[in-house]
Structure formats: structure tokens, C-alpha cells
Length: 325
Image (cartoon, rainbow, N blue to C red; front, side, top):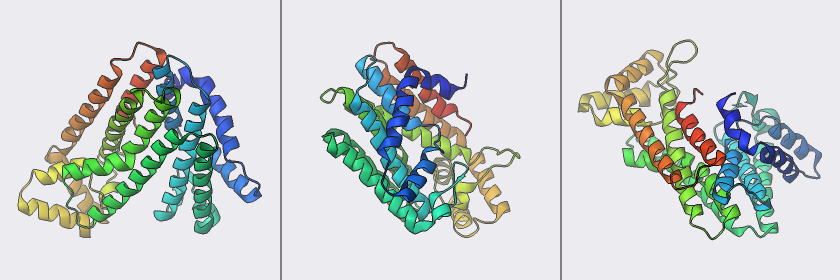
């Protein structure tokens, strides 16, 4: 059994029902919108976000979920999907998960409007049911994700990111959303308890590890045995590169920054930067930091009683670190 299926097993019934409810939550009287939302629903990925919501809810409650849990999972998927549709427009991207993006098939204007529609559906689903605590968690996540993206753009122009600024960027850009899923799950079943903040922190730590793993993929060989170097081509400052820049001479630093700024399309130069980062031990350092975030996350689960939901969350943490894609 694949690890993702193993993780999903304790919540398989909830996930099935969730898919139905999620589909319903997108429906509209406009045929064009329904056609587009049908396309979105049918190209779903690994569904890690709703899985986090249901697993944390069931671990915290001792095995039960309620309507609020389903609504929380739907809202986070609606709002997250809205941000992805908008991201593809911002990045001028034609593909997402191997499928054509909405803007590639229906143009930017429609993609932006569909994103707005999904956002409003998410907000209304919470408001109509009085789930203001859940709405607050999600709204904070969207604000942070936007700030993180803008902070990265601001810093990328100068390529002067310190390790602390890097953590702040990935905390906002990536970790916030996973943190929101976990705190949502806890809050849906125990609104007043201490679990909401504990699970938020748990999700944030997994999100940090998840992003560092993504950074490392840039230096691992692809199917034809070459490091991808995509982040370097896109002038993204990742942890292995930041570490290498902090542990080299002024001349080396000048050369690397010049390479990333002005020669990022030159394959030979990109490969030289990749080799430089490897020689400066940037990869083992990033792996060490990733392992630290993982250990911290697992510590937060330690006090919860043994259950299949807790086991699945531990599997999820390990999957984030060990995944191949």
C-alpha cells in the first residue's frame, strides 16, 4: 500500500463524504462556472490539506468529527484553490499538476473571476454557519501567504536574504496553510481547548520541513540524472544556497550573486552554482534543519494518547521528509 493511502485509511469515509460536500459547495447557477469548477475538482492532487484537517480533528476528539470539520475542510480547499488559480495568473503559468491551468484554458480574466468566486464561496460557507473562529484561522493564513509572497519578491531583487528572513518567508508562504489545516481540525471539534494553538504550531513545523525538502529537490538529480536548478534559474534564494553564501569568501559570494542575477539562464553557470553549494555543505545543513523541524513537530504529538489518527499524522510527518516528488 502506498504511504499516502496508508495515511488516508483511518479517514477514508470522511474523505469520501468530504469530496461530495466540497463539490456541492462550489455549485453555481452559471454553466461556465460549473464547467470550470468541475474541471478543478477532477484534477485534485494528493489532498494533503483536508487529510490534515480530519486527522487532527479525530486525534484531538478521540475519533469523532462533526459538520464543522467538513465545513472547515471545504473552506480551506475553496480558499486555497482560489489562491492557486490566482497564482497561475500571477506566474503566467500554463500547467498545474500536469494539467492545463485555468488561465491557459479560459484566459486570465476568467481565471481571476473564478478565483474571486471561490474565495467568496469559502467566506460565505463560514459566515452562513456562524463559523467565525474557523473563518478567522483561514483569513489569517491568506493574509500571511500574500505577505510571504511579497516579502520574497522584495528580497529577491537584492538577493540579500539572511537565514532568519528565509524562515519568515517560508513560514508565511508555505507553513501557514498547513498550520491553518491542523488548527482548523482541532478548533472544529474543541473550539475552546488548548489543542487549536498546539496543532497550529505542529502544522507550521511540518510546513517548514516541507519547504526545505522542496529546496533540496533543486539539487537532486531528475529522471535523466541532472540537478534541476530551477530555483536558481528563477532567482529564488533557498536554504542550501543561503548557507553556502554565509560560508564563503567575499569573492565567491560576488561570483555566486552575479551568477544568479545575470547568468541564471546559462546551464553551465547554473551547474557551477549547484556544485559550489554542494561543496560548501549546503545540502547536509538544510537536511539537518529539516530534521530539527520534524523532531519538534513530533514532540507536539507526544502527549496525545495512542490512536490510528496519531499514527497517521506521524506517517504524514515522515512522508513530508522522505517524499520523492
